[in-house]
Length: 388
Image (cartoon, rainbow, N blue to C red; front, top):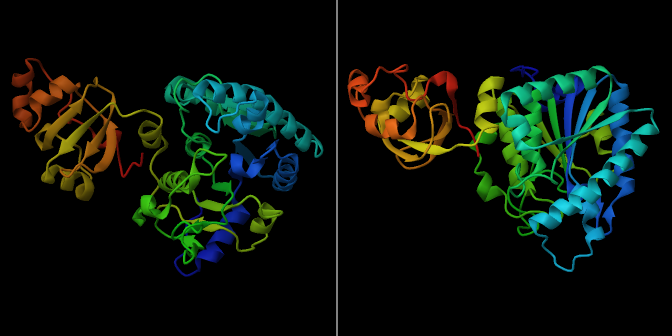
């Protein structure tokens, strides 16, 4: 992350980041890549043209590409507007090979080699497989190969496990320690309201502190071809900001948009990163794992966590929800039920119910055995302001 000098404008800092970013993750959505007839080959070729220019500058590029389901959909000859999960998976099976073939041919015009990487949540949830994936990316990038990533839609059992490739892209940002995230969408940037419904909506050229925005109010609706919409793109930008990675949300339908952006043209919406980046490990546990329960704090514990950076002690817990084991990820909620953060529990849910609200000196007697940890959740295993 390039630190922001206090005496320059955000545009000057943005241009400095664009000039110095070496590892860039670019995400392109289905609505950009496809038309009513399926995959738009002209768009694929133009995207490859622009990425090749950046690659020739010595930058490392990772492309997170949607479009497999949309590319294969027409071959199913379904009369229904909404596909079932099995039909989406079948569409992905048909469309993924066509999508990659199109990318291979487009990049081959510039003697660029691409690599297909299909991921599921399990690939990034398991720590060993996660580290192996990181090594694979390092090898590909070291060989000047362009990885093209998509969710492995054909085998996931939930719909669909990442939910959208915006979320997947943020996990990749952490995996490879990227310098910049560019999200290509159909919108020209981030607006104060849905411009299709509110003629008075204005575009934000720069969002300084995304955590201060009410994303639910700002963003409503999804694109017809995709699964995310602007809400998921801003969630992704907020997660990227936690990593210290700036985000540019910009229209992929603007001709030569990437070349214009890197030439300094004002396009899209620039979203600044947070002042202090969270660790890779905390980001991994917060977003690669699924919360399996919830802990409700009392007011004092909430202040200790948010204002003083303390660990969570059993004495500060009012309620315990769900069933979970020692080491599982749990949501940490305020007395009003709002999420404060997520963290790894040092006790299972049954034990935690017994010791909730109790003093540390009483824990061993209540549980009937010696305790290995005084904290219910240690601050080293806790990420505040995690967004799900």
